[in-house]
Amino acid sequence: MARTFVIGDIHGALRALEQVLGRIGLKADDQLIFLGDYVDGWSQSAQVIDYLMQLEKQYACTFIKGNHDAWCESWLMGGFPDQTWQFNGGKETVASYDGYSQSQKNSHIIFFNRMKDYVIDSESRLFIHAGFTSMHGPAMERYDTSYHWDRTLWEMAITMDKRIKRDSKLFPKRLLVFNEIFIGHTPTINYDVDVPMNGCNVWNVDTGAAFYGKLTAMDIDTKKFWQSDPVQQLYPNEKGRNR
Image (tube, rainbow, N blue to C red):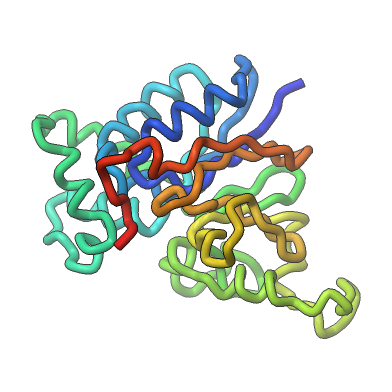
């Protein structure tokens, strides 16, 4: 039976990506949904993109765009390097492209350009990097930057009073649009947790790989998950996004 995995924020940690995919034991008909933020943090951002471009030649892959990917995409397309981006891992990403030809960079631009803002599967499950604010779902979102930046969806889900039932008028309408929602963007280590977190019908799979956490891949049906070693141990001479 084909399996579908969601993979949390990678942030330039190619060693962690290779490790966690190896631990899954991928089969030919498995599907992979990446929730974004492939770059910024550890030293192998450009190499992560190379790896993913090769991976999709072997497996069915879906790539969601994160806020860090949008920053990198803008820079690759000739935009001025955003100072906030540089402080939050962009400097390491720029360095990872040293020695890359314009042709190689152009192939990465094409890859970034075709990343998706979100995906909805046949079982009404949403895969998105950050969130959305419209009570009618992301298709009705007024500001598409919410797909990459919104934290209110997760903050609402994780702090919801569990006594409020789905059929209550008090239940947030945003959480009624989909059966399940899978996100990254907000590291679970912010809550002193290094495994995927669940709030209402929202699953957060960003387990802090950019910092001192691990990279996670989770089976969307069984909720079983696999993790890399703590990423900082895989890059002992680097700081990632730790300050």
